[in-house]
Length: 348
Length: 245
Image 1 (spheres, rainbow over the protein chains, first blue to last red):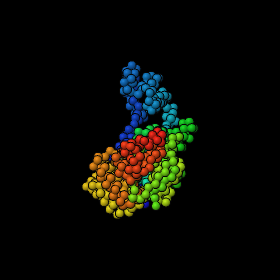
Image 2 (image 1 turned 180 degrees about the vertical axis):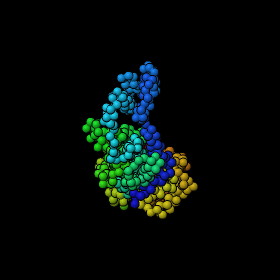
Image 3 (image 1 turned 45 degrees about the horizontal axis):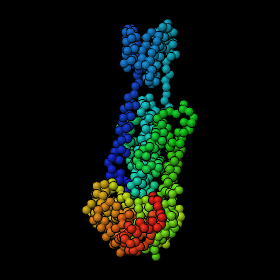
Image 4 (image 1 turned 30 degrees about the horizontal axis):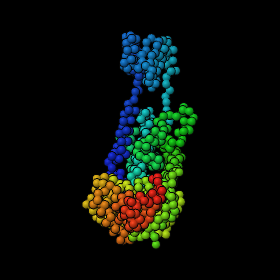
């Protein structure tokens, strides 16, 4: 019963605090929208200059590059230096700007297409037809997803998990910290409230807003930004609530080791940033083994993994229950540690 | 039956001994003043009595029950040095919340919260958020939060710090009313003229009780006949120096 008293008070506090509501509900939509446009409108074509006057780009080439004819190499260099082109072709030389690996990769594809077309043109017509057939790209089938997936579609599940984790950690941590520094914790512990009831009340109170936040973010992604997703809505909601639960437990636990808000923020580089690095935004496949092992101690790596499986691959509960169980284990561990830390304030 | 019986309380923070074998008793219908300079160990003693700070030695009984005990916790009212209020809730919501934690049902909690707000003349502002209260209003609300649930033992840690003389008078009128109802009250203070209003005083310094008696008895021990002189002489006699947390 007293769990509901704590939860009810938290709900009243948050519901009456417009700023907190904005941070919990509006800020994630703003971040997602920015990412949608930044990642969805990334560079897909190289800007290539060809030195000469008689080159006519093929359709295949125009799919890979925005081609401009220039009269001299000096002009091509000047355009490259001023950022007007990503590289140029002069006779047998292929020059790329070279500072941005992703742009260099696009330029490389255009150069290869150019070289291939030039080599084919040099062959006798009979051989050229045969060579063109040999060089043709095979038709690729996609096991998951579809050809119109964009970078944002791939990153959206991880980003959603991270945003929920980060905001819940911060808000729950600050709320619990204020409970201690304002003296209200001392006062509420002069009652028959058990420490476990206090922590559980926080779970319930914040859980309501975490659920609301999750529904808002999910709905925004699916119905407004129209992110490609293979999933059923309730399973994603369950995963996000599990992430929020772990984050809540971590936030309240770490707040016990901070004496003010500034000290709580000092946990961000230690606790939050690594979660972001290991939540699937970066591919760890070719990283050193110790880094891959390190990822396993960060709870969000499991939550984000489950989100990716469900949203990108259409996995069901039976495919992600292990991730959820590990997250739940982390939550129970932090919950128990939090109750132990509260012994500092009252043994019972 | 004593409301509080504390025997041989020891408390250390690291290697520093903050309370060194403190004994005290408190009867129902008595106001006990704990007097001492800042850092003498008054708040530590209070938190030990409340059960929110573990002991390194000694025992505390509320009535006959060893502390900490969850059931007895509901029978203690506590006003901290800080206001300890939720500023983004209204005054009434604060009181109802604390009442519900003391185990009161909603109807009774609401009724008592209204009554207490009226008692400290905050009834017109009971639906205002606490963030909009003045310092004095917050202290009054903080006092009522300690009184919610009709506790048998009321512990007030420096309740009148930073408030004007009129409000201080109102507080002491309320303390006397509670005393007349048989409540056992502990008031910590370092203000001598306020200490004179207590039935009994313990003077604490360096984590030990250096005097225990009525204000009159303590004053009679010194030629000057003031509590301040009694405190200074007792401190010299005891040889207690360093202040504690």
